[in-house]
Image (cartoon, rainbow, N blue to C red; front, side, top):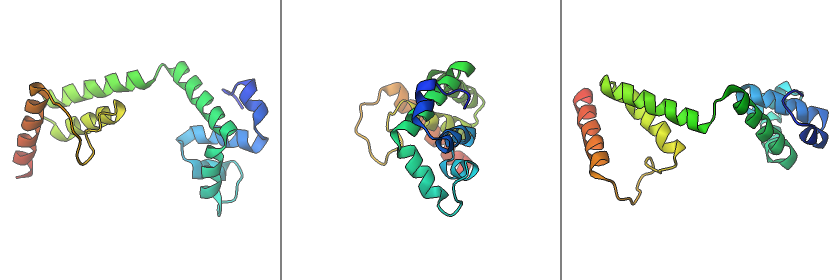
Amino acid sequence: MSGQTPTAAKKLTAKQQCFVAEYLVDLNATQAAIRAGYSAKTAEQQGYQLLQNTSVAEAVAEALGERSEKTGIDALWVLNEAAGVYRAARSDDKLPEALRALEIIGKHVDVQAFKERVEHGADANLASILASARTRAASING
């Protein structure tokens, strides 16, 4: 399989290597298992079990890391792009887009902003941004 180091390739069967290659297509374990030749009836369980297999998980992680390196797209890039989308959407008064970008940013930096209740010490700037967003949402939703 291309993109896989010889160390990882030695640990996997041909079918597991195929699964890893197929998993990288859409990150869907069930569909990857089917495309790799596992039974469609058991593909969901097989996909889950394959991802639990240490050797397969390592091969997937290596392949994803190599892909990230080749494309230059990593977690920092995604965070910067989401921040840019947020700023642009906010300045254009596109509240739904701005809130979606904030949600992505919040999940990325694990601020737990979207859990039901989180104890935190928010600064005045964040509080005013959230108050403004709530006001806009209320006016849009009537």
